Length: 161
Image (tube, rainbow, N blue to C red; front, side):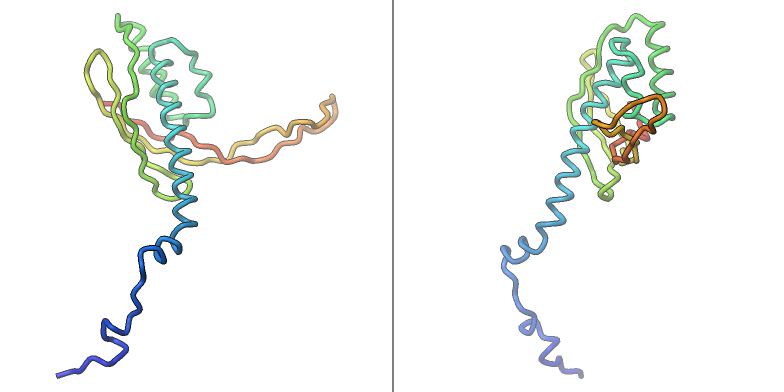
């Protein structure tokens, strides 16, 4: 028969109040929450643009930096298939849920409606490096273009139901 020592007993572990635990977890949660909000805003805007491209109300070039090459090919194929049909209805994004995998990757899923029916979508977005011109730099024939790298969201996988 073993006896629990004083250090192993539940009474030896100091109790933490909810405020102490919340205070310790605040900084990472705040950063994750901000990333999740940015990911959701990006997802809603990009999906709306995708549906407008598929219904031929917006040119595909507007999605240039928002979607990966595979998703772009998929959207082009859907737009060509819709151009042959008589479907003039624009799909509408209804709900978007974001599940953060880490600070730079998220899985998205939700519903959209088309012709009175609810359908599902799922995808994956990632923060990828993007070169951006620095404003205020002199532009001449021989002056180098000053750029900096920013990380922006990009839709890399999309499945429409």
